[in-house]
Image (cartoon, rainbow, N blue to C red):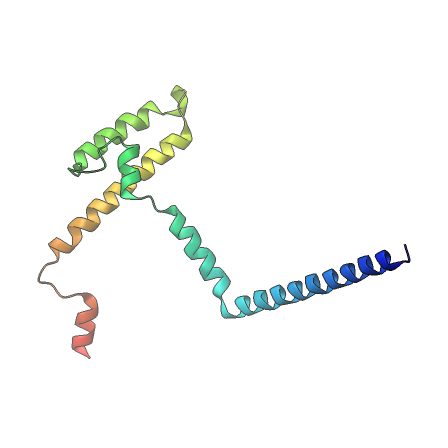
Length: 136
């Protein structure tokens, strides 16, 4: 193997090792830079927080409401929640995972409902940030 084929294989191995080592050095430098600037933690936190939110459409589907048209009332949401939550009780052979999804769906719809109602109740009142700016 000391012929031309052996020489070519040796060159390929040496070049590959050089490329891989440069990539590791660059990755390490980037990791150190991210750790110093604090970007790594914020990016990870944003990713996790973004995944935890359930969309309104998904919540409506889980609680078996039509996804378009009339928005269900708080009483209807509670009624459907109780019905499905009790039906999926693990003690009765149900699924804890499904119970969790049902609970998160109710939570998402209630949060969405409170977000839609909050701006209308604060009409005519300045925001706290406006009060601070006016007092300066």
